[in-house]
Structure formats: C-alpha cells, structure tokens
Length: 246
Image (cartoon, rainbow, N blue to C red):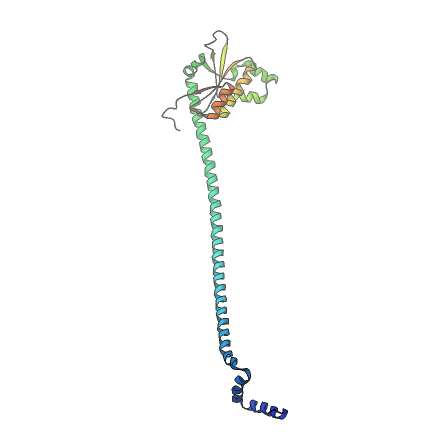
C-alpha cells in the first residue's frame, strides 16, 4: 500500500505533534545502529576530554622542563662567572708567585755573588795565581775604545753587567801576563748566564785580553750545562750552605 502526498504530509504533521512517536519510529528508520550512537558519542566525548587532559599535562611538563632548563642556564652562567673569577685570581696568584720567585732568586744570587767576592782569593785559585777582584776600570783600552766610538754602547753595557771580574796569573802559563775571569753568578745557572759570560769574554778578547768565561752557582740546568760545554764556558758549582733559604 503506497502513501499519497497528502497522507505523507499528514504523517509529518502527526510526528511533529507527537515527539514520542518520533522516538519509536527512529530505530525503525535508522536501524539498530542508531541505538549505539549515544554511547559512541559519550565515548568520543570521554576520549576528547582525556586528550585535553593529556595535552594539558604535557604542556605542564613542558613548562616545568623549560623552567628547569632556565634554572640550569642561570646556574651555568653563575658557574661560568665564578670560574672566570677563579681564573683571574689564579692568574694573579701565579703572577705574584713568579714575581716572588724572581725576587727570591735575585736575593739568592746577590748572597752567592757576595760570597764569591768575599772568598775570591780562595775560590779562584783553581784558575788564577794571586786572584784579585777588579772592575771595568782595569781595562783602559776598553774605556778608550768606548770614547773613540769603536766599542758600541751595547757591548760596553754588556761588560758593565758582568757580575764579577777577577784577575790573576794563569798557573799553567806563568810569566805570560794576566788572565781575567768573567764570572756570571746565579743560584741556578741557566742559558742566559752562560750566554752572558760567553758574550762578555768575546768582547774583551777583541782587546787582546786573555779571558776565562765562568758560570757559577749552586746548581745548573741541563741545557745550560750543554751550552757551556759547547761554548767553552767553565762551570763552577759550590755547595749550598744549610743556612741559605731554598
């Protein structure tokens, strides 16, 4: 049996007037799957709520991580600042220690040089007969060369810087004039001491002087000892007294 248009419009009107009929007709029209739609909608809503909660929890964890990261970066910056301060303090301390060691080394050298001067008559008898401490004034030809300009000011200053001049006769060659010992004295003989002794001896030999370059101290570095042997600079090491600071 078929519906006419009029009858269909009457059915629509009746369904509008009777909502309870619509509820009864809906499963018939949409099928049994319609009854599962509300449950599915509830499940979807639950899933959406769970997703929102998870997203919120993730964002909170992300924010907490960023806060920890910022705190770590602040601590890192503070650590780097303290480290930079420590480096400056360390460098300052090292510089002060180096200056102190330099002054202490100079003091030791002055004490040792004074002992060589005081005991020249006994210590230098190994190389000279009747040794006596001299100065640059004992070499008039050197002074004349400076006045005439044939001796450079640099070479003259090099001679003035010699720690100790000692003259005497060479016991292995008596009667053949004096020998001059050019002595550089340091607590620890290093390359500079050996080089200075050799340079001063070379300058003085140019004026006809018989010269013995000498590097003296309590100890000598290995490289200074090797250089002294190569240049022919005599090394004299004396025992350090117990009352001298090291």
